[in-house]
Image (cartoon, rainbow, N blue to C red; front, side, top):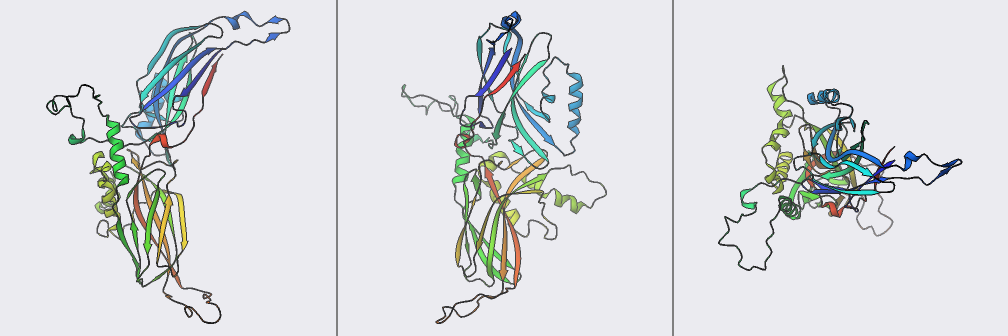
Length: 436
């Protein structure tokens, strides 16, 4: 009997960013049982050497969705084309493979003596163009390291190690690429003791991500309804990382309508991206459906990391001229992550703090889904500005039994980026497989 054990080298966090290196240790052990039967020792075949023909490891990204996808029919075709003794990654998990790295051969013709253990090291880069790990309403993306091995004249045995992947924007600007030796030969340092180190593309992306999320650009929003001015909301920055708090302030001074209470919800939007080829439909309806799609397609990943997209999303969502007011904005499937509620009658100023958990998925977009984040405000207002006598000399200030109230809602988009995987504590375990 052969036991296969796999464990990631990053013990404190099984989370990786796109473009980061995944490292895994794989052990093959010939297990020998020391038990004795009543008539003597066990069969001699149990103590003989074991033989494995080959073993390989690679990284797969699977997608499971309820959307109608014409490429999903290829799964059945691949299952018929691949033989029983071949590695079929399509049938190893409930989903279709959308990203797969090249398989790396660990060994060929491995022979293990009783009690012998052989250890192998596997490393692979997470593809930069792959989607992040996401578990939504109608679609799922998940990554697994597939370790496959086979005995002679036996079927392929597989062991999968799941990992979590976070998206990192790709930076591709000429002025930010590492300078080569030919271009800076005259400006190169002459000190021979200085170590020359080339900056990787992932380090440049992390640097820009820190700049975008640390940049403070306060934006003020005037909140009013048909009865008058309610208050003013200030959001200190539009881009945040996982684990941060969304902090804002509300100013109810000089209001014409009292805000009795309000709630702020951090919501995740799952917007399906469907083909816009619709016949017998007015052109205006098609344009309104694809408005958000075309607005993001005009930005490249460099502008996403520089914060341009976050600013334009705020402008398009909060301005009245960006969209027809009669046409409802697409909401998709909503998931409320965290909520903040306050009673604020007769309050002049207050603050809003909404935490972003570490287990959620940041903002990303693929060919089938667009995941966004927003702040959903619900204000309960009243036209009753004051009641009773302020600071009474005798008795108590009693609130009225009933208040004429109205409810108004407001959605404010925010951008959520990934945090450093090393800052997220998610201990991994050892995965094993027994081959009899």
